[in-house]
Length: 457
Picture 1 (spheres, rainbow, N blue to C red):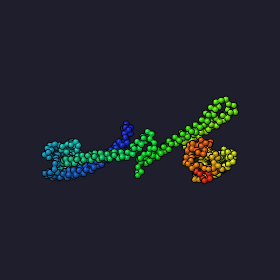
Picture 2: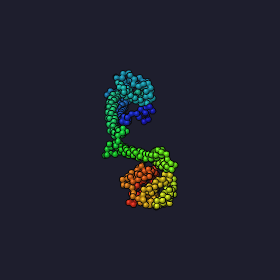
Picture 3: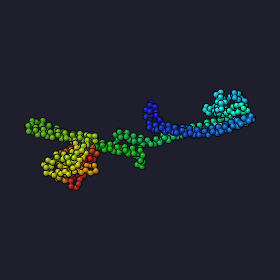
Picture 4: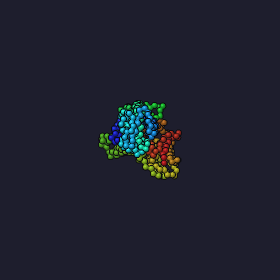
């Protein structure tokens, strides 16, 4: 059913419960109207058939009497009769009719030409008196045409139909009211959890923390699943807010240190005249802190850029070339510190974004060379369309309490809090893995530490 253009916006502004009740009421009205119409038609057909049978029987007896020029027989209670000649003059009529003509001139003309005319006199609604159903037919008596009209009263038939209409109207009205009430109560009961969820969300918007929606555990309908989804969303929002708070606190700490050092170096340099050598040392120290700030800013920008997978552009690349591009900048560091750096990778092609994956592997190698001991091994394997990268060292491994937050931003083991680095290396590695649709995992092997990347390739 198409609604008028002006009605549709007004309906959309109504509450959901009201719209549901209206939909139920309209649907039930159509169903009840159709059912009532079917019942009325069936009863009316049966009554009309009975009335027509009586009328036909009465007509047949009148026809036989007129042909035999005998006395006209009486008909059913309240029946009427009339006999006309070929010119429409009344030859015989019931006392109740006297000389009243039952046929119109047009109907008379049709009957004279041999047609049978049947029609009703009076209406069912509005109520009229002397309602009849008549039938007129031409017969021949003594070589002359005669028009025989038989009529029976419709009073009992019309009364039955009017009573049926009244009962159907009352029954349909009561059914519609009951269905609308049940629909209203059902809609209110079904949407009550939604209103409860809305109230909870409003409480959350007002600043209430640790809020969770009260979702029944013994149900599995659409509203319950919505509640579980909203609770999971609240869990993620709370975790995200906690990460943001921790990020702001750690970023403030990380930025405060180099800025404080810069301010201290400049204050000392300006406190009294300095020689050229002292100024050079001061500028070098300032340059180191400025570079640290630049590295920190670039790392944060890279993490933000990786927050969307749209920045990942995959392209085919030989795995051996990828590994060599990641390892090459770190070979001199390994040689300078007397460490062994090995690479194992099959000669195959992978579909990755080398712009991000190469520095991610470089971060893992840099962490292993800076915080680990012994040999550093980089191994790569491709199996069932997935690339698995593993970087291991022979150092003391990660502190157990550090492993659950190893990939958090600015997270550093206590032993390395005062060492170089911003604590964003592993966070960057995880962001690269997630952007590729993969995962990152850190663990202790018993002989050192290992970081594993698992990526679709």
